[in-house]
Amino acid sequence: MIIRTEKSGDEATIRCVVEAAFGQSAEADLVDALRTAGNSTISLIAEEDGEIVGHILFSPMRLDPEDEALRLLGLAPLAVSPSRQRSGIGSALIRKGLELSGQSGYDAVFVLGHPEYYPSFGFRPASHFGIRSVYDVRDEAFMALELKPGSLSGHPGTVHYTEEFSRDF
Ligand SMILES: CC(C)(COP(=O)(O)OP(=O)(O)OC[C@H]1O[C@@H](n2cnc3c(N)ncnc32)[C@H](O)[C@@H]1OP(=O)(O)O)[C@@H](O)C(=O)NCCC(=O)NCCS
Image 1 (cartoon, rainbow, N blue to C red):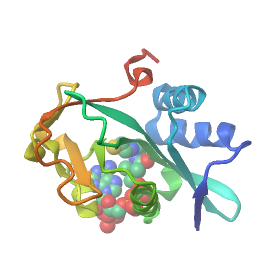
Image 2: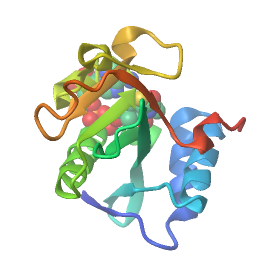
Image 3: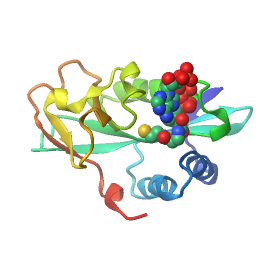
């Protein structure tokens, strides 16, 4: 398996993988909308024998009250082809995405997802940092990971996804 950045021509296959993973089109529509808006900051695919079997996307997030010094990303969505799930592809995509996020100078990454899955990558409830999501979600489902230790200290507030996340797909 290789993990690489999305390139031109991958769009339709990524759409198929995301739709199949979620069993609906909303998340695939979101991926397309983020790309069109230029908010697909980091988009990686997992490829096996030339076939795309997984995809992960990171988009910019904004803290309210604003702090221009903080560079934040949101991890969403993450999708692995149903027949290839539970074989480490999702984990490999997360690890590579976090590595690239750190190398690109981002301070922290947020994720709304399975509270059993993400802590093994270092995520912990965002509430630990005094940060909450705009969405009304279970405390442990909205998680944060500091790429630079201490970067979220002293920045209580609410983090917002880009406008594409509030669209009705
Ligand atoms: C969630 C998802 C991305 C995980 O990808 P994956 O390649 O299957 O995950 P991995 O093989 O790397 O998982 C490793 C471990 O994570 C845990 N895990 C995986 N999926 C999980 C889930 N849905 N809930 C809880 N734990 C999960 C398991 O402990 C797994 O280990 P195990 O196989 O020994 O039980 C994939 O199942 C998927 O595409 N699901 C549908 C879409 C989705 O829910 N996306 C995530 C939104 S937050």
